[in-house]
Amino acid sequence: MKVIGFNASPRKNHNTAWSINQILEGATQVGAQTQIFHSGELDIGPCKGCLGCTKGDGCVVADDMREVHAALGLADALVLGSPVYMAQMSGQAKVFTDRLFAQITPRFSPHFKEKNAGKKLVLVFTQGNPNQSKFQAYYDYTKSMFQMLEFDVRDMIIVTGTRSKQASENVGLDEILREVGKKLALDAAN
Ligand SMILES: Cc1cc2nc3c(=O)[nH]c(=O)nc-3n(C[C@H](O)[C@H](O)[C@H](O)COP(=O)(O)O)c2cc1C
Image (tube, rainbow, N blue to C red; front, side, top):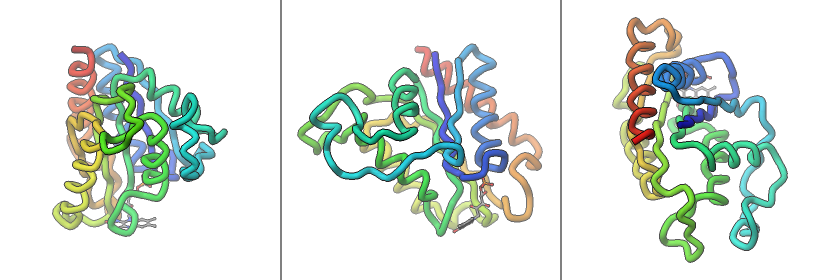
């Protein structure tokens, strides 16, 4: 079973990456193969809206999203982590989501592909603000958006207060995240 992570923070070694890595570590502990992609290391441009993916075999844009698409095609589950930027997901996370169009299209589209429907997803948000309910409406919307895209959203993790304290400094959070990863991987295996 394979679980991949996508870190939509441009920072490779900070809160979002750490949180995703704990989840992947938990998945590894129950036998999953894992891989993490860091948006900051990749050249992934926005969707061009060319609809080339509806005619041929996948996205026609030749950038690093090809590698991510390939990995996602083989994965049982995805952990998508984003910092909150201006009360929403980061631009990198939105670009990533738009580029999924080549692989996953909602049923309102005439060229629906079954390929990735039902893929398991854990969403991870990290936010500077200590108040979790501050962005709850946006988180709920985002979860329903991914459900509309036919992901099987298993969990949504919100890590708060990273302005004053690193995610890794939250006592017990590592264990909670590893449990999320274990559960995700075990669910994906069944
Ligand atoms: C451009 C930018 C916009 C941000 N906007 C918000 C925001 O609206 N609300 C919030 O709580 N934190 C905001 N933050 C703080 C980040 O969400 C927070 O520090 C996050 O944990 C960073 O993730 P990282 O350490 O993985 O890069 C913002 C940070 C940046 C750089």
